[in-house]
Amino acid sequence: METVTEPRSRRRMSGSERREQLIHISRTLFAEKGFDGTSIEEIAATAQVSKPVVYEHFGGKEGVYAVVVDREMQKLLGMITEALAATHSLIKLERAALALLQYIEESSEGFRILVRDSHAASGTGTFASLISEIASQVEDVLADEFASRGYDPKLAPMYAQMLVGMVALTGQWWLDVRKPGREEVAAHLVNLAWNGLTGLNPNPSITAATRDLSPSAKPRPAAAADKLREFEKAREKELKEAEKLRQRELKEAEKARVRELKERERLLKEAEKERERLLKEAEKAREREEKIRQREARLAERAARLEQVDHPE
Image (cartoon, rainbow, N blue to C red; front, side):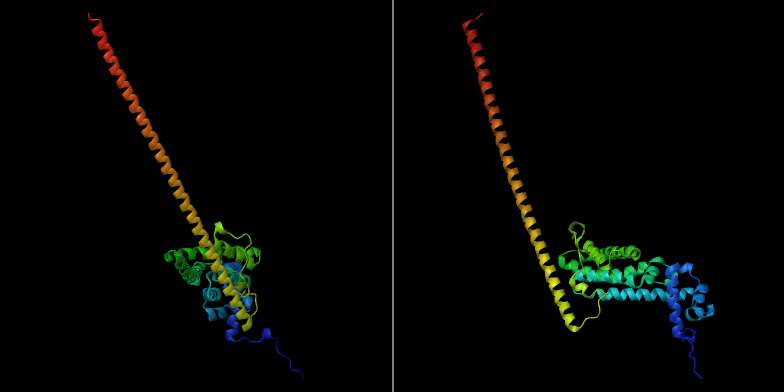
């Protein structure tokens, strides 16, 4: 007689398997309905178990929610941390932006949970605390960059919050629209963050070093890794040359400004000299007129006396 094997779906799950099943089901429900919209009854019914089974593993809805949020937090933080291990600051920024977009693309349910709920059950696992943790890592990157450029490193925490907040909000928007592709979105994010509004590149793209380590790329052999390092070195050299060019342009602009100020000062001095010369000439003319007036007055007085002598009364 042939032995019939019981289908896997009916096989009794081990404790760890049941736990993972409940986490997976709860994750989907929390993403769809939020914490308040999901009930223990619904979790149990979807898993085809009784409510006590859920209580046994997690102690209640709050427990399973905390586990789901913690896993998503750790996954995203791990991806961001790995991205920030690059050498050049621009590449760090590119890879961090790509890491967030990859997480959104591959773990949409998890991202919806993180941005939708800030329930007390999540403990520290709120989206705000997640942003804060990521910002603290970006802060170190910015502090080094600021110090190398002569800026105040104390401003790094504020700029880190700005950068991470910008990327996170863009991620929330992209979660639903999904257009354009994540590399293009990352390129434009970095374009704004790196160049600022006054220096936007009209056609930004991700650097070759970052593209070769894109989350969609497959693991590469050692030879490819060496090539990647060459790309990264070339990119760093390109960035350094661009920075030198920028500094040279700034110096030239400063020299031109100084020359302009000197020329303006020279013209002002000449104008002042001309004004003083005109004032002196006007003063001399006034003095001459005064002397002429006085002489005419004396002559008139003398003429009057002579007339008195010639015609005495």
